[in-house]
Image (cartoon, rainbow, N blue to C red):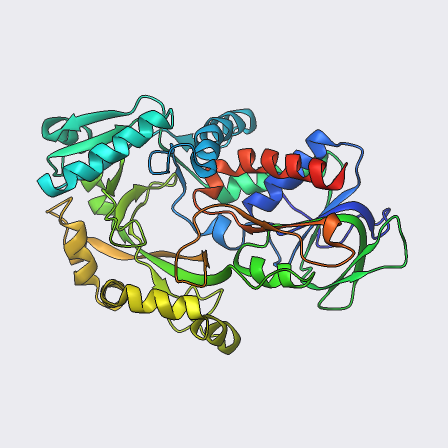
Length: 422
C-alpha cells in the first residue's frame, strides 16, 4: 500500500473536508466520511512520510474487550462496540489477528476486591463471555503463570494496528479521497472565499482551502487546536512506555494469552503485563516515564520546547508531586532492568533478566488537566472566531482508541453532521 506524498495532480487544493492526522483515528474518520458522504471531496494530511507513524504504530497491538471502563461511560460503550467492528473489518480485509484471550490476575487476597469490581464492570458493560477462573484454570490457560484467581476474557485479541490503519487509508483512497504526506499544518486562517473559508498553510507555505476541518492530531492535538483559538487545556504531556521482550527461546513462558495485573487504584497507569504479538514476540511492560520530547522514543531524545512546555505546566507539577514515589519507581525500572523483572516475576516466577532483551517503545499522548488529573474521556474543541463552527478538533481520544477507532469515527461523523450540517 503506497500513498503519494503529493495531492492528486488532477485536483486543485480545494476540498469540502480536510482531515488532519494520519493515525488510526484520523484514517478511520476519513474512511467513515467517504462511506457516509461519498460526494464530498476530502483530503487527509499527515506531517510524517508515512501513516501510523506514532501512537498507531507504537503500541501493544491489543484488541481490548472493555472490562476496565466505568459502566455507562462513552469510553466503555465505544470499546465494546469497537472491538466487534474491528474484528469484522479485519475479516473483510484479510488482516491477520488472533483471539488469544486475556487473564487479569489477582496475586493475593488483597486484590480480590479489585478483581470482583472489574468483573462487575464487565457485566454492566456487556463484555462478551467474561468469567472468573481459579488458580487451576489459570495454569491450564498459562502454565507458567501464578495467581489465586483471574478474570478470563476469551475475545481479547492481538493485531498490528499500523496495518489496520493503512487498510482504512486504502479504503479512503479507493473511495476518492486524497492523502498528502509530509504536510505539517502550521497555520489556520480565514480565506476570501465564502465557499471554502478555511485556509490551511503548511510549514513550507503550501496552502489547502476547505469548507470544514477535522483534526485528529494525537501528540500535537492541543497545539493544533490552538491554531484556531482553541483552549490550552487539556494539555498533552508525552509519556514514554518502554517494553522488554522475551528472547525467542523463552517465548514458551507465555503460551498464548495476555497476562495483565489487577489495576492499583492508587496509581495512574495500569502496570506491567505480558503481551504476545501477531508476529510471535512476547513483549513485557510497559513502564510509564515522562518523555523529554513529544516524539521521545529514546531515553536521550530531547526537545527544549516540549520539555519546557511540559514541566512549566501546573498540572504536570501537581502530577509529579502526587505520584512522586510511583514516578521514581517507574524511572528506576527504565534504567535498571532487574527492577522491572521483579514485577514480572510476581506473575511468572521463572523469568529472569537473562530471558529478556530490549523491546519496542511508544509515546502516549496523555491529556492532563490543570489539577494534575489524567483526562480519561473524549474532549472536543472548535476554537474561537468566525471559523469555529466549521472546525472540530479531537483533543483527546484516550486508550483504547485503536480498538474503538471505527466506533469513534462514526461518533465524529455524527458530530460533523450536527455541527457542520453536511
